[in-house]
Each structure stands twice: as C-alpha cells, then as structure tokens.
Image (cartoon, rainbow, N blue to C red; front, top):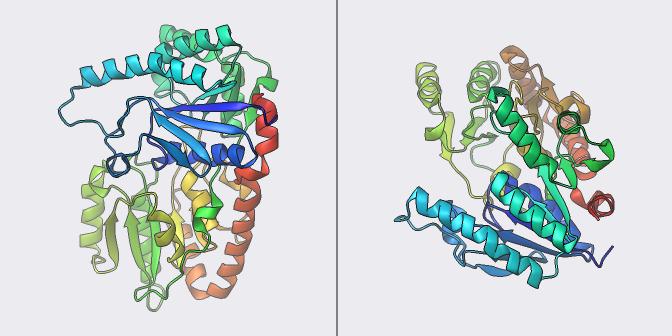
Length: 389
C-alpha cells in the first residue's frame, strides 16, 4: 500500500486555508506519515488573507508536497471574473502534466464541477488511476434543483470510482442518489489535526472569556448564543466575557446582533474580535474558559469542524444537539448539550460550567478523548488507504 501515490486536487489554498483545507489536510498528513507519497495540487490562486501571506507555490508542509498550478497563490486585483474562469479551465488541463510527471495512482478531487470531472475522468481511465471524491455536504442548493439539473449532477457524481462522506446522513443520501453499491462509500467523520492544539501556552487570562467562532453562512445562530449569554451573565457572579471570532460584518443579521448587544447593555462584556487566521485559532480557543456553538440544524448534511477543534482544546464545550452531534457526545459526560433553539437550556449549561468548573474540566477531558478517537485521521489511515486503493 505504501507504493500508492496520492494526489489531492483542490481549489482552496494550502497549507493554510478555510475549513475544507483543514479537512483534507488532516488525512493527507496521515497518509504522508504512513509513508505514502501525498501531494496537494491547487488549481488556482485565491483572495484569502492566508493566500496573500503565503507566497510559496511549490514545497513541502508537514510531509505533504504541494504545487500551485498557476505558479501564484494570490489573485491579482485587476483580473476579471471572466479571466479567472479562463485561468481555471486552462489550469485543469495543465495539472494533468503534473499528475503524469508525479506518477500519481489515486486522485481525490475535493472541489469539482462537470468540466473538471469530465477531464479527470478521461485522464484516470486512460492511465488506470483511482478517481475519488470527498463529500462533506449535499450538492449546493440541491433542494431547489429541477429534474434536468439533478440528472446532470447525477451524471457528474457517477463518474467517480469511490466516495468519502463526512456523515451517515450523507452516506445514505449519496449511495441512494447514485444507486451505487454501498461498498463504494466510506464514512470518514469530520477530521482534525489534534497536534495543532498541543503545546499551546495556556495563559492566565486577565479577562476570562467564553469563545464562540462562527461562519458567514449564519447556521451558527449567533443570536441564540447572545440570548443565552445574557441570561447566563444575569445569574452568575463575575461573568466571563464573550469573545466572538469570525467575519461579523458579513453576517446577514449583523445589525440585529449589534442591536441586541447595545439594547441589553452587554457591550462591555461581548467583544467582537473579528476573523482569525488558521494559525491564531488554537491559541484563542485554548486560552478560553469554555467554548460555545448554538447551531439549530445542519441543513447541508455536514458536521461542524469547529466542534472537533473545540474538543481538542481540553476546555468545556457547550453546544446544541443538532445534526449528528449526539451520536458522538453525551450531555455532561463529554460536553454540555442543549436542545437546538432552547435559549434557557443553553444558558443553564453555561451556568453549570461556570459554577462547577472543576467538574466541567473533567467533562472536557472526556470530550478530548472523543476527539482523539473519533475525529483523528491517524486512527483511520489504514482503512482509508485500503479503501481508496
């Protein structure tokens, strides 16, 4: 199996990038540590802060080789959308030369469209390369698809040999939608790199805080976090601050959130910290008193990567029992679970953590054990490699 040569083809920056980069980086690192040649091919530059700061276009990171097909990590401000699309289309073709040169035997296409799937499918068929994809959510806006669009998406997805899927819900969906043998699907839960949270200095904070990270898609229900925090702060002595980490201005309901903060006079306690780089996240999470996420549902069918990172900090986690979270976590055993949308119950969990912090740390230790066993790609590397080969 160690004679495998694995390519991960992505449209997000590497080695530092968004959630999707974190996802594939974890198992790519596990492959490389197992002794399998592993390389990430990035199809085009991006406009992210990480891409602007990281200027290396070829190299090795955590034993994973990488190559930017464009020989550039950051999109020029002067390029139009039309030009960017042309560059992308050309780069898909250019990547074939790199894949052949590197003698790749397995391709994992992380982000794809019909064009890229067709090109790589033909390439893989000619050179007898296994063609894999990793699905962490439903196809975008799938519920609004008409019959024709569903048919085209089915054709696109049917071209892969095998499928990694993040949740059991997605396992059932894709195997049914594609009418394929379930042996072609591998349930690979959300994976994180636990080592990112090791050896981080846990400082005695001048102002103890609860950490909340969120995305701009608004599924994190930050308003529920604020409402629960307001109840919590009125029922404990010396309440901890609430730090909000994320692109606050990009939230659809940012004005509603600001109004709530100001009208409830908690502006001195709630700190809007803004977007963190991937490298800053571990320090800020580890140095919190506890962490919170209050999603009401995961309509994408996915699973929150942030939850795995929360658990990896060894700090207490307050979260809602949305999606498949209760499959892995038990209330007051490995985390503090509340019903989605139940503000009073979420607040009670925060109060419980605050008033009995020694016990909360014991719960956090069990949560870490869950992350270490269930969300650690190193524990599954042999089975994944066996599946994709």
